[in-house]
Every structure is written in C-alpha cells, then in structure tokens.
Length: 294
Image 1 (cartoon, rainbow, N blue to C red):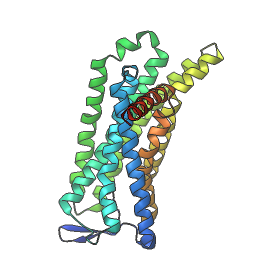
Image 2 (cartoon, one colour):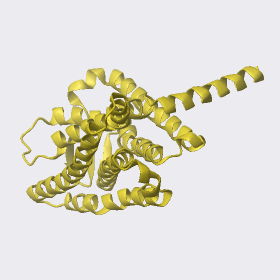
Image 3 (cartoon, rainbow, N blue to C red):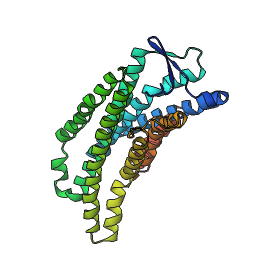
Image 4 (tube, rainbow, N blue to C red):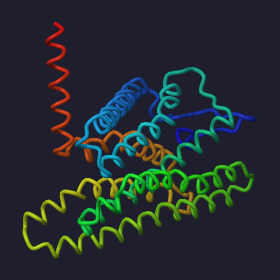
C-alpha cells in the first residue's frame, strides 16, 4: 500500500510503522529520501520544460518522454511526502480512506507508466522498422490518443483491486491483485518484447555498422528503463505466495517508488545528445542573462 507497508488495524485508521529496524538512522534516511525526492522533481521539471520550450524536442519520442517525466513526479509524490512525515513526525496515523486513496493512485500511476513504456516501444518500432511512414503514423492526433489510452487503460485494472482490498477474505484480495498485476505487467511486457523482436530483426538487416550503432542507440535507453521497471515490479508484485520478508519488500518498494524515478531522467533524457545540447544552450542563456543583470 505504498508506504502503508507495515500496518496495524486501529478501527478506521492505520498506524504507519515505516522502517522499525532503521529507527536509529531515521534522520539520515529522511535526509537521503528528501534529497532523492527533490532531485527527482527538479530533473523531471527541467526535462518537461526543455521539451515543451524547444521546437527541436517537440517530436513524438520527446512528447512521450515528457509524459514519462510528469508521471514520475506524480508517482513519487503519492508516497514520499507521507513517508518523510512518518519518519520524523510524532503522528503516524493514516485514515482508512486516506490509505485506500494513496493505494489507488500509487498503483494507478504505476500502471499508466507500464502502458506508456509499451507505447514508447511501439514508437521505437515505427521509427526503426517503418521510418518512411513515421511522421504519418505517429502524428500529433495519434500521439494524443495513445497518451489518453494509457490513462484510461489503467483506470479499471486498478479500481477493482482497490475496492476488493477492503474485503475480509484476504485470500480473495491476494488472488485479485496477483491476476490483475500479472495481466497488466505481463501483457504490456509481451507487447514490448514483440516490438523489440521486430526492431532487432530490422537492425540485423541494416548493412552498415554505423546504421547498427545509430539504430541501437535509438532504443538502448528505453530497453534499460524497461528492464529495470519490469524486473523490479514482477519480482515484488507478480507472485501469489505471501511467504516472504516484509522488510525486504519495504526496501524493494522504496527503490521502485523513489530510486527508479530518480534514475529515469539520467538514463533516458540527460544522456541524449540532443537533450544535452538544448540543456547547454539554456544554461548558457541563463548565465548570460544573470551576468548582464549583475
């Protein structure tokens, strides 16, 4: 349940116990998580600003990247502020309604991101396998519909288990969560894998080594993010047995919720030559403006 990872039922509220084994390090943990959260927000805001302000970055790929950055900000914001308050604050309770709301948005935004990663794999497929028709297929209307589909496609698969989680029979909740997690994660993974089978097949038929390198560089960052996202979430959520360490799951969930959104901008955007060029130009303009004013 996001940061409702270890709870005790108290009428209509939960007591958040966070990381009992790390209470002696809670100040250090608070500082580390606050720094990570701040950097995540700053990185992604910078990326969104660059991609919407510069015409060179107003293409389908960067449009999807800006949406990924927006999702990462929302995703980590759902959990991190409450976790930080829990680490240092005296009041560690959360109402049942509050916890259910947090649960819904945590999994809803995560599901949107999985569908978006599948859409981005399709974008890579069209760019590499059908480059002459890329601008026709990936037009602005199609891109907007794909983004809308990401949000609508995540609505029901997350709403159902969020409602069922209030049921008394925890075995039913466990099975529903497993089935829907498997459906969303594995189906989007299958679509992404299928896209990359066609991509790799096309790349292998490119005659020049330079063409190979350019094609692989186009999708290398996406493959890295997909591997991290699917690998970590399948390990944590797509399993039926609950005989596992709760403390280990807490750490894994923090990594998924805070560390992954922190790394995504570095992996996908800040390593991109065009993005770095636009960023350097923006920094030079800001520096020149500051020097003129001083």
